[in-house]
Amino acid sequence: VLFVTNSLTPGVSRVELGDKGTTQRIRFSNVGTDGFNVGPRSIRHDPVNHRVYVGGVGNPAVIWVLDDADLTLQHTIENAGKWVTGLWLDTDNQRLYAANGDGEILVIDTQNNQITQRWKPAGTNPALLLNIAIDKKRNLLYVTESQHQKTVYVLNASTGQLVKQLAVGDA
Image (cartoon, rainbow, N blue to C red; front, side, top):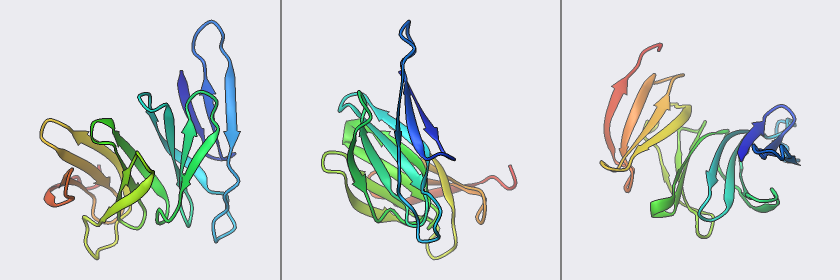
């Protein structure tokens, strides 16, 4: 199964990759305060709990939680800042990390879909956080910022403490 975001016509498609070749789709109707549709960007599949998490780029942003079998909307996580641009799922610790355009990393408890923490690795500096990856062995979270700080933030994945920054310049 392949899950695909449809950013311009806000929705998600579920494509069965076998002989069946079936496609299912859900469309979202959220509209930001600017009058534009909230468009899906990042997507993470949780096969253990049969969920799909979809980050919505908009102001305000949301994270949609879908059933992975039929794409029914199970929950909408609101108050996610501006532009949820990146997601990373840590099923071992029942956490979803979300990066946003307000320079925040949101930590979400996947058992109740509640935001439990907000980390700001750039402090009061402007930051558009984008992509996220985790090094489980060393418990480090890597978060890219390429607009203002042009760096990769390396954070303690449990506490959000800034461990170091990796300057990337205009890469």
